Image (tube, rainbow, N blue to C red; front, top):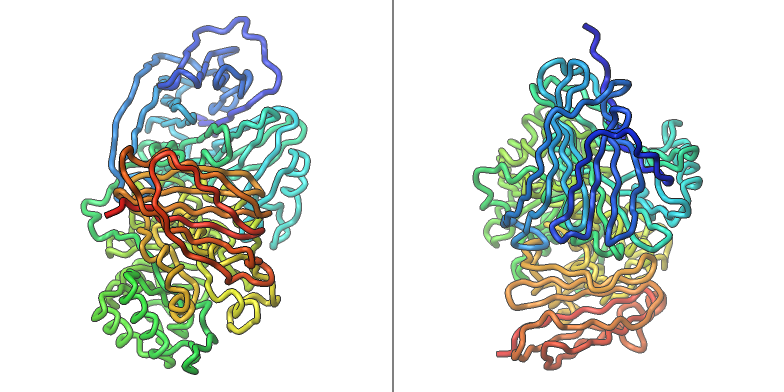
Length: 639
């Protein structure tokens, strides 16, 4: 019997189609009643519409994952789910998973499947599950999103500034530009859509880990249909084929997406039997410090003495990790790694253990192939706690295996250099601590701008934790090209030390990797206090207080009774920070870390001030920042 390929098609039309002749409709409301999904059959195909707060967000659209086959709904079930679960680490300690779900049992010729639609207060997700019988081996799951006219689009752009705001025609032009290998350019997710009414949607996927055989979602622009098309390919031998969740988030501001829990709620729950060993934290990092000359005349490089200095500072300042990047080894062959003669790694690790500091080690897959079955066991045998995995490639199957193998060896893993955007993976495997799905600070020896930072913080970060390497305190030294790995162009790093401190809080990650020398932080210990006192990863609560693309961003995070607030401003200005989230009848001590009148992100970036005051609930703080500057607050109960 000939088995047809399967294509999942999700089409968002601008103009409504006639609904005459449909049989059966299913209406699903969000728990708060403000988001409505209508699914119905027409011409033996599934169609749907979405309304949010009484506005038509998506007009009559088609949903078709059986190419050229008629769909018959045999059964349907509507259910309400309201549960809470606790994170191993995350932006919130406890997360509510509350949604209405529609399940359709579908027959199409000889193939049986289940289609799931979940409606949250701030998002909708679709998934299909095929039974084992008559399941095709090669699968293409394709979803098309036809947007409203005059919509604007934003999306990540690899290790460059995110694209946008652009039209669908401009998006198509970007897509057909030849890449490094002459093929058409790959467009990255998440795709952010700003409607003419200035409402926002974010389109991406979740739980790709559980969708065995599926590769990363790709998107393309279809100008003729005014459509965005997303595709997943899969080759599978699984008895049950489960697609990733297609996710559509809805927000009144673009900042709403950063603390949205839909994607992580959709992810497979934690599968580690014991995750007590998974500890997020801060890390010093050697790579951007090579060539730094301390006041005592010592110059940092790849040697034991340099690494002892990092470890001493980490131990004295409650920094959990020290990351040794490339050059600790010289050659890689199947089954062996040749150590560099510049250092004695065994002594460095022993010294770190004595100081109660854990080690991360980099691995560059381009230099050879140790063999991943042995790689993680080898790292564990060295006594290190984490691996920074570089140049792995955008390969979902390979990434799935690496995460699982690292977990089996009780290793944290940080993916770099174009990693797979596995939204929700931190719930399934908490050891997947972060990833460089962005342009990290000074990466490729380039410095990103304040505008680029805000864009990445609002767009790239939708898919999950980012390893961006913020927190440069010796800005003048970097701009003077006093580092071996600093930006190629002098005076190209435009930021302030208070902005750098704020960025370490704003960007959520399980590993806050600090890129400067111990002496640079020691010289500004009163400012470094904000980073030192700030917990990492394990937050009780997080809020985005202000967000404007190409403008500003302000984030507040709570740990116990203490609040940490970080703000940045591209053009400079004042943000009013209302402290209505504090407790009644309590007096708090607030420490401000601020730009000054003399601060200038281009000519005087290291001018700052630290001051304290007493405040109560309801106070409004006016956070004043220079262009490219920042503002930090640490709030704790008095006495």
